[in-house]
Length: 73
Image (tube, rainbow, N blue to C red):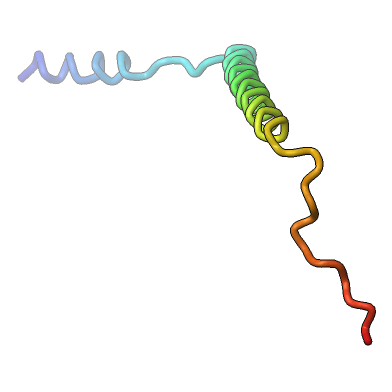
């Protein structure tokens, strides 16, 4: 029983650890933001390539899909 009384405070102290400093949290957040930005840039570049491939395959002299507007008569 005495051992339990002596060990409980030790376990409580061992469970308490120091919070990360501001600089550490800032650096971690900056790295995460940079990684997200690179991923977004890659997605945008991929989308632009896909859009360019689609528009390149369209016929240049296609007629407009809508009929001419009415004169109102």
